Amino acid sequence: ILNVEQSPQSLHVQEGDSTNFTCSFPSSNFYALHWYRWETAKSPEALFVMTLNGDEKKKGRISATLNTKEGYSYLYIKGSQPEDSATYLCAFSSNDYKLSFGAGTTVTVRA
Amino acid sequence: DAGVIQSPRHEVTEMGQEVTLRCKPISGHNSLFWYRQTMMRGLELLIYFNNNVPIDDSGMPEDRFSAKMPNASFSTLKIQPSEPRDSAVYFCASTVGGLDEQFFGPGTRLTVL
Image 1 (cartoon, rainbow over the protein chains, first blue to last red):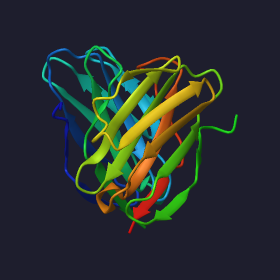
Image 2: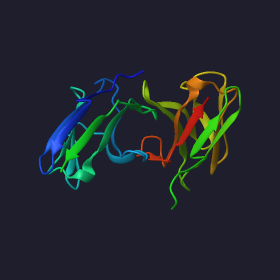
Image 3: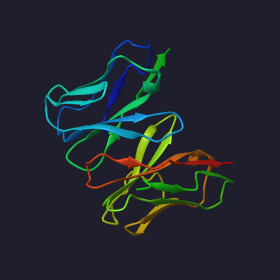
Image 4: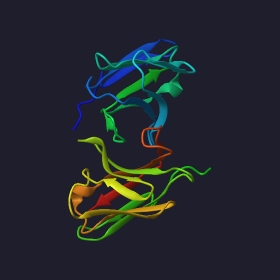
């Protein structure tokens, strides 16, 4: 079992504020790092798939960075909106098809 | 495309009964995954198929669990006999290639009494 850790476990942010949170993963045998967004009562939806050290990806107000050498990725939400409220999962893969998911960071945006 | 389709959405059964969960992946996707989500263990991979062939079933918890993919458009996950600790949400996901983004179905919420 690969140790993928996400922190914090949960956070509350005021509407309009920006926030970020972390995914840490083994730095050896890196193949890919995925970010998924999971809204309550729905299924996970892919945000980003990142493979290269130094990768930065952006989708609207959400962006992510990747450091494979030190084994971490940050997800940023700029100008949080209530619809950003969800659990954000990262998943790590080492040279094969298998994704090991973290426990997620649950974001609650207060209006 | 309708996305990944799972049925049933909810299943309530009694301990000892056989349970069959079904999944239809997105057309053209070559890889299919079955996951189980619980509060204690989060999202766990149970089994992975590539081109209808089971590649890795090391995540299947016990012999009571079995999965098949008879063709590219259908997969089943069977639990026989079911136990209360099998209660969880079971997700099916598909992808074009092994490590591309995965598309998840809506899940089946299983309750074993």
